[in-house]
Length: 359
Image 1 (cartoon, rainbow, N blue to C red):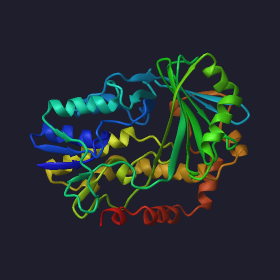
Image 2: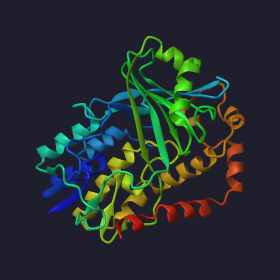
Image 3: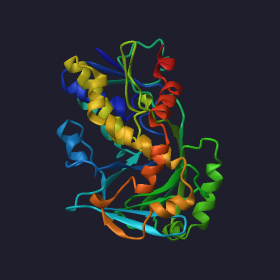
Image 4: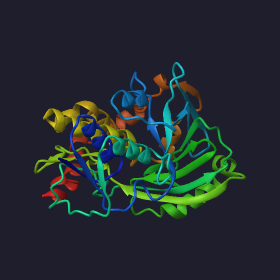
């Protein structure tokens, strides 16, 4: 029997793959329900590879439906200047999905798949990380260095295939604000690396003052607030005392954006693969996405240091294709050269060492 601690996206993805291979799987979940407590919307990035991300998951046994294609990104500078990023060959840039207790949320889709395959989910089964005999640890963030706060709205005045990003330290220091549509539903939220910032107050100020946000929410109905903490890291190893640490428990989240669905699913699948094939989990996840995480960390270190004047340089007033989009303009590369990236990453690894939590 394979035991998994945590019935989030990572644990469920691992359970599906293990059950498909004919192994007995038990997921231990400390709560009495599946999914997050709040219905909101998040996005799965789809533009950094030649393949379609949802097709890749489906081909590997993880079927995701009720996902809505996003074909455009608009980034806004503090002045209101905006840059529009469009797809190549009609391929969606993102897919937006529901999170939370809704029956069509991505969590509930995976839960139903795992049950059909014979996986057993045991609720109200709290377990200490250090004493647990689980093979896979996927309990969510065990540290905090990313804070997201925002609101969900219905009947928003939006383009249903466009994600909005706002870079403005007046409202979100050391981070950004995003608006992710799901049909006419909309999640607007801040994601910041400044854990001590008064983000709820700054968020309310943003939605009442920013003209683009005001227009999108004109006539919309407030549904609920959403909030949560996570952490990003690139551990030297995600195997501690023989236990595989996967998903956001390992810090596998996009370090510059805070999105984590892609890495949650991938790391769960790879955790299962390492058990099925008796292969090195660290080698698998490093080959699959360590390079992406490292690039994200470089952007994160720069974003934490960028002023509003820097954002004005970064966000050019034009329309470009996703292939022409440069995440590291020349002035950002020059700033990166001033940093000792390996030293900064070393600090993160020491601060968020998984051995402290598991040993």
